[in-house]
Image 1 (cartoon, each protein chain N blue to C red):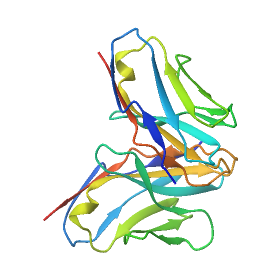
Image 2: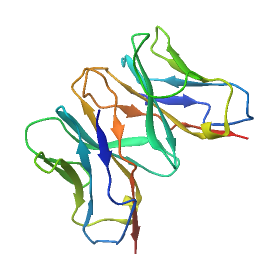
Image 3: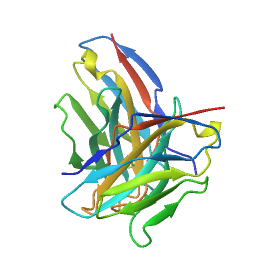
Amino acid sequence: KAGVTQTPRYLIKTRGQQVTLSCSPISGHRSVSWYQQTPGQGLQFLFEYFSETQRNKGNFPGRFSGRQFSNSRSEMNVSTLELGDSALYLCASSSGQGAETQYFGPGTRLLVL
Amino acid sequence: AQSVTQLDSQVPVFEEAPVELRCNYSSSVSVYLFWYVQYPNQGLQLLLKYLSGSTLVESINGFEAEFNKSQTSFHLRKPSVHISDTAEYFCAVSTNSGYSTLTFGKGTMLLVSP
């Protein structure tokens, strides 16, 4: 099976812009979770989508949003970018059943200037 | 809410030496425990997990971890490390809430030198 893919891998934006990141889960997986990784805060949970519905959300401002399509692919959007949004954004897919293993993609590295 | 503490941000060891990476967690409900590894410029890969049953779990590349409920710990060990084990290791917990959400520790960078 193909693994989790994320596009783009690298992105440079300026403050105030918005950005959309994409994640394609492993075939058959219905859950996609997004995490932000920074040197200071480590790995923090953003949100999880399951069958096109957001079913869990972390403690991030409303500028961070996401959606999931009927084929389980997911996008996350960050509006009005701030310097502090520079991070590695990881998505993970799983069957969505509790403690099933989450499989991570390689991440999208976002740099905000 | 759950939290995970990885006591060491960096652990330097020599090749073929044993290593232990420490992980403690806090939770008011039962948890599942995971160790993930991240190599440079890559995503996270699952190393091993504890869901239930035997408290000692092993990975295919020689790592093992033991769940200790009384000490709320899930330390990762390897009896003999290789240069290729150099990476960042993350301990994580989730609950049986039905969600897939993982709460991660800050990570421990394992530096193996010849």
